Image (cartoon, rainbow, N blue to C red; front, top):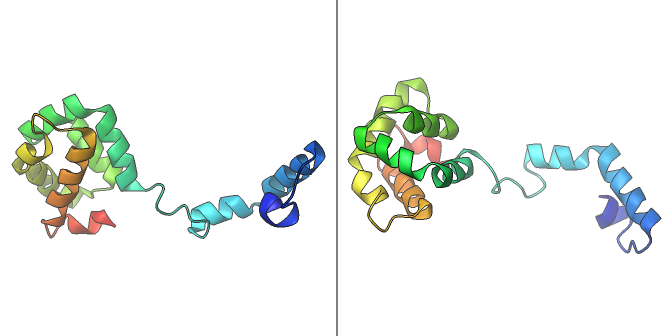
Length: 130
């Protein structure tokens, strides 16, 4: 609001300070981000967090997915928001799709896409895809 509406052509330092103060005191950015009206709805969310989690934990996640259980797999389910009653289906689906998720050429991006495809094919897990 401060730089877009009140001070759209801010050139001086004091104009930038006033624009930042306007943004900080009006609460409009916080409201816009949390309500989804600022265009941030696609930037975050459980699946984007899952992608980052997978990137940071690929090796341990692959080991857990191969076994169909484990701390890292449980943490991924938690990041996605999988409810307790769907945890077994999540683990089973991930294990049965191990080969497509963790091929020898797999990256965190390809594993993430394969995970989403596997979840889309399971009726109990589709609701977590957004």
